[in-house]
Image (cartoon, rainbow, N blue to C red; front, top):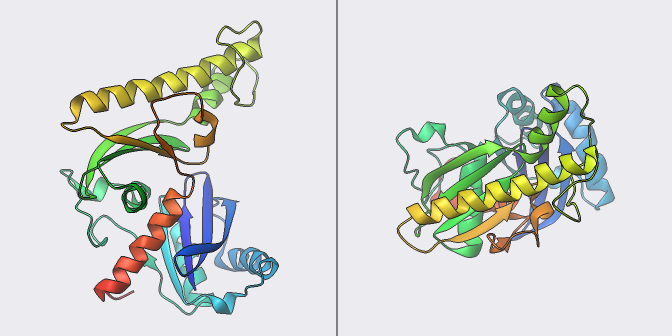
Length: 260
C-alpha cells in the first residue's frame, strides 16, 4: 500500500492508498519537533483502528513545505516501512512542465495541487488552495504549472487583527448572516469573511482578464468549505485534490521506471 504524506505549514494530511482510492485519510498538526518514532506510534494506532498495520505500507510519497519536518518523515519511512520515500520537487514530476523563470521556487504543495486538479478536471484551471496562505495557481491546458498568486490565509488575517489591535478579541471564523456588523465580533467576522470572499473574487477576475482562454476555478484546502455557496466565482470544490495529486505523482513515477 502507498502512504501519501502532505506536510503543510499548519496541518499534515496522511492517506493510505489501496489502488486508486484512499483507504483511510488522517490529519494532524504539523510540528517540526515531532520525531519519526512519535509519528509511528500515532500512525500505528490510527491504522489499527482502520484494520491496517505499519507492515502493510510498501511505498511512501511526501510533499513538504516545512523543511524542519522532512527529516522526521524521511526517517519514518526508512525506519518503519524500510523504504526510501519519494519526495516531490519541482524537477521530478513526470508530465509536468514548470513554466516560471525559477522552477525551484514552485512549492511542492502547489505542484501537487496542479497534478491533482488536472487529473480530475483537465485544464486550464485556477486552483484556489485556502490554508495558512491562499494560493491561486494556474494550470495550463496540458497540465503545466504557469505561476500564480500567494496571499495571506484567512486565519492569518483574523490572527493579525487580534495581535495588532489590543482591544480586538480572538474570534472564530464563520459566515456572518449579514455584511454590516452591529458589534465588535460581528464586525470582525464580516470584515474578514466577506473581505476574503472579495479578495478571491477580485483575484480570480483579474487572472481571467489576463489569461488568454476561458479557465475553470477549482477550490481546495483546509478552509475552502467556508466559501462554498458564498461566491459564484468558484466552479468546483474539491477537498481531496492535494492527496489525490500525491498518489497520481507516485503512479507516474512508478510508470516511468524512475528510482523510488
